[in-house]
Length: 267
Length: 298
Image (cartoon, rainbow over all chains, first blue to last red; front, side, top):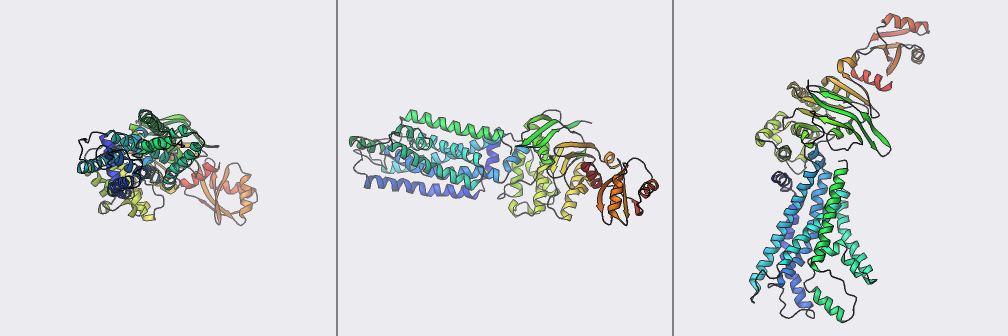
């Protein structure tokens, strides 16, 4: 494992797109947390529960992970670039020629994605922690509501698995990135269309939607409750354990398809 | 002599095209083994299969008598088609990756040694994308010899190089061969193979036409360069003499192969009996190119 991480570290430390995307993430992610919190408190007062404070524990975790989840698309693009680069430069082929097994090559990429997930989850945790420590005036500790951070970690791995799957399937960087982003838009359009036809439950099980609902909009439950009171057409949100199971199943499927595709295909 | 590589009945198809139709070859230790063939004959497919990047449809191969294990390739240095490196990394970083894959020790020393050997030490910190074609090819050879492997597999190693670059790479390969390494080279540049190889396999349409030492292949037949005032008549007369076989035009004359040990005077007599009088008749120094054309065209 150390060998694979060393190889990936040599490859990635001078990759410009990685440096730029991580810089964007580091700078804009806290700004996004601040902006989204302000948006909720200024424009959604109707739905706000009593004593809601987006900058303080425990609410800050939901706000921080929801805000950071937007950047998962950016991180997914980075994952696509890293994997499709191996095809563009034909380096995956060369690694196999040099004696690396396909299994180890895939494990190396999986470890990179896992490392990215850990890094951005830790960063989101630290950002939320700083916001929380600076603004919490009640007795709430930083541990309350911290499960959102765990869900955020699962979510990043899910998006990475999808990026991995697309990059392996398509191989070309530009096409893979376009397809990766289009998948979100396409699924949203299909999901909304079928939801309007009464198939909200089906939409809840669709992959991108299931992934995004791991870190839902911080006051989504309150908004749904308000919608139900008015007999409106509200989205179905799966119970968290069920949603986690669905997301993990998708993640496994995406990684397995990518693995078997790579194993079977000529390089 | 130890057996380095043995392929048995390897087959590969791309949709409806049969690229390899049951190829069996054997490479022994210390040989410089050339795989020859026109474009599309299956050279690169063969190398791709034995290097683990193309899946065969059938048959098997074995490196060092140990089967098809991935770990075997750690003892093989290979360049398949083009040099493949990260363009944004310099020579040292690119070679470090290879060294890690091959689980080498003394990485810095090895890198310095091979970069000096291929004359890239002065450009060690320049990114790969800034290299000329010749430099890229030399870095690929540095990468192939980094682990001091027992076997080198090179696919068109002088592709796209200028004459000086070709001479440099050829001399490098011969130096490496002099250390007792086994080298497998695929090329359609026959002059290159003739100057380097000890053994040759000739492929055509995915099949092995012949496998022999270079000397055995070169002395199969005598080749004559002949000419007359009417070349078309001469070519027609040749078709009527079973002992002679037209090889190629060599304006204003033609090359023919002669079966067995027929003396030149008898060739002249046979053609004269057909009404064709030669104005040129000389022994043509047979090279691999004429042999290759003769074998492939037959």
